[in-house]
Structures are given as C-alpha cells and as structure tokens.
Image 1 (cartoon, chains in turn orange, cyan):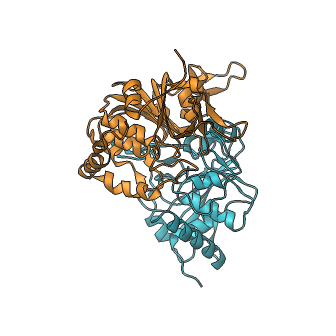
Image 2 (cartoon, chains in turn green, purple):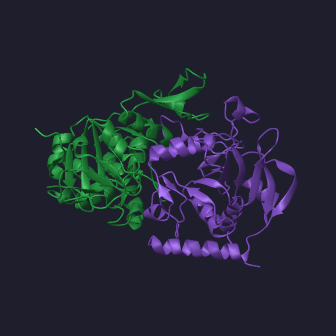
Image 3 (cartoon, helix red, strand yellow):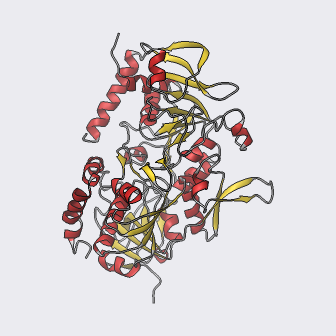
Length: 277
Length: 255
C-alpha cells in the first residue's frame, strides 16, 4: 500500500481523520485559513475537540460557537483589526454553548512548540515570557537551565496534535503540495501531527516553475488531499483571491448575538450539506 | 493653521519617533498607521516587520490584519512564523517594537489579556500574541494609546507584556538587557520614563491641552518632567500624507 496522501472528498477526509475528542490544529496565519474544512467538521458535528491555533480567527469562533470544542490552545484570540471574537468570549465569559478551557501562550512560544513538534523533540525553549503573568496561569509554561551557560529559559511542551488541517494553493498529480506567500506554521503543523488534511485550490499535473527553496510538503508526509476551491474564504489564497476584509468586518455584527450567529451558521454552513462531497 | 483630531496628532507624533535606520516590529492598529506614516515621510528606508513573517514591507494601504496579502506582495521577503520569532526577534535584529494595548500602568506594563480575574474574566481580551517577547527582545519599545480612565489604570489586572515592572532596575534584575518602553505617545501628551524610577513622566503636552485634562484621563497621579514643552503640532505635509493613506485604506477595505 502506498504511503502517499490520498485524494479524498472533504466529507470523507474529515470522516476518516478527525474523531470526537481529538486534538486538531487548523493553521494558517491570516493567510490560507482552512475554512472549508472547518465547516465540514461543524456539519459532521464533531465534539470535545482540543483546538490548537495561534490566532483563533473566525473559523474558531464558528467551531466554538457550534459546540465542537472543549479546549483551546492559542496565543491571540481576536478578529484582526476589528475587535473581539464574540463566540469565543461568550464561551469563556458565560460558558455558552458550554465551558471552554483555555491553555494560553505567546506567539513565540506556540511557533517554537510547533517547530519542536516537527523536529520530534519533547519541548521547546525560548527566551520568553520575562516579567509576564501568563506563566502564573498556565502551568505548562516552565523553565529549563542551559547546561553550558546557566541561563534560565522558558520551556513549553512540543505541539503534537492528532490532526493538522491546512489549506494550500495547489497539489500535483502525485499529491505533493506547494504553499506560497505568508506560510505561517503550516509546514511545522503537518510534520508535527499524526494525521493531516490538506485542502487545495487546485490539483495540477505538475507544480510548475518555482524557486528551488519553495515550501513543499511531499505527498508521503500527509494523509489526505482535498480539492476545495475558495476553501480559505474569507481568508485568502495568495495568487487566487484576496482576503475578504469586508466579511471580517461584517462578522462582528453576525457573531455578536447567539441568534444571529446560529441563523448565519444554519444558512451558510449547515445548509450546505454535500458542499464537501 | 490646520484642524486635526487627537488621533491624527497621536499618529503623527508616534511616526516622528521612528528613525530612518530603524528595524521596526509593527503591531496592528495605531502602531501600523504610525510606522507607515514614518516610512512615507521622514524615514523612507525604515525596515518594517510584521509578525506574519514579512520583512521590509511597504504596503500602499494599511493592512486590516498583520497578515494581509499586501504586506507579502510589497515585502523584501517573507519567512515562516517560527523563523520570524526565533531568528529575527529573539535574534536581536529588531531595534524598535511598536505596541498598543487595552490597559497600561504608570510603568508602561501592558494588559491585553483580561479585565477582572483570569479564571472568571469580566472581559476576555484577545491575549498577548507577539507582545510578551516583543517587549523583552526589541532594543526599545514605543507605545501608542489614547488616554482615558478605562485604559490608563492605577494597577493592571494582568501583565501581558512587561514594561518597567515595578520600576527602577526591575528589568535588569529579570535579566533583560533591552531598554523597554522609552516613549508613550498619547492623543494628549508624550511620556518618557524617569531616569531613576522609570515611571512614565509627561515630557510634552499637545497644543491646547491643559494639565487638568491629562489628569482627568489618567488613573494614577501623573508626574511631569522638570521641563515640559509643547508637542509640535502636525504639519500640513504630515496630515496630507496620513489622510491620503487612510483614504486609500478605507477604499481598499470597502469600509
């Protein structure tokens, strides 16, 4: 049996790779956020997920508001340039639709923790959190002493999720994936995870002319490839479509109240049954 | 004599603090406007870095997020987020970090995490993002925040990023070699740390603002430097560039 990633429908990929209670990292730093895959997880009604993500963004507002998550590991949870994530806040402040446990880090710590996960190390170290209060509320932020200089550095566990979910520009016929633009921590997340789903704008015969140093995930490092055009919207796919900043602004009003949020999800996500087929 | 808002004054004064040879780690919002105004006026060669990995970016419009495509399109290059935090920020390559925040205290410690108790917050704010390490690892930090009793508070519920801690040599005792916040630019005045206590102290007041007005918008008893000047108001040139930038931005975001 081949160890290459298989091309699956979105529904089949989510069905096979993501189970209730799994830890899942949906990554994409503003760019290439895997919205289509997140919506399929909501349609399939996954529960009790531990969600990893540096910048929770709208997709986690949606997953949290629809009751898919019991724990969130993150470093910045807002609607960039707009304000709060109202569903995240409602879960944390009021326990709606149910309580959400937070494990909170800084960006530097999460980026290092993904890097260590990809490198098969047990923890990450950084010169971080100096004088900050997060170590007082997150017992997973500890310290390690350099054996050479005696310097005390911050230490956090490596991130090793059950599943990484990312979106990319394209895959070739063999299932190799190319990412371009703001590449965030997606390569690290896939290499750190046990399983992975990669949605792409298009599947092409050959990846074509590219830099020798392009960011490429070889087919044998991933589980499932899914063709999902516009699968990052309202985030963006560089070279395909721009970030829908107007929608990010509009989301503030949609998500502010539980009723308007649920109505939007029903009309735009739940009613799209088969969108992932 | 042109008419301008407090927010425009704040952005112009914040922009002036940046130098042409700075390498600046840019926070979103007010810092982003100030950094790009500096680049479009007196500091054309400034290197602007956003935490999404874009190095030397020259956006024509202000980004809504720290990862808009515009930042990548106009950058010298774009690196991964782990590389950004490891090599460039922790590596000591950044001369200035430019931050905003929800709450600040007299020693320029910042809170963007929670109002109230962490476990049962009254208001859950976005959190630290890059700020805890920006505050520790940039050569110095500039902060820009409008004044008000909700944001300039006597004590913080949570220290998201360290300023001067409890003052004096607190940063050095924690092992930090960087300067921390050296300038706090508000819509009413400019503050700098006192040489001894490191408490943020008013060094200049914007035109037409009275000391009573400053105190009415600040939750701790403000201290003033021995010599307090008037902040030079925005020039028509500075205002024109800023307004053009914001008009282009408004059109681009469909706002």
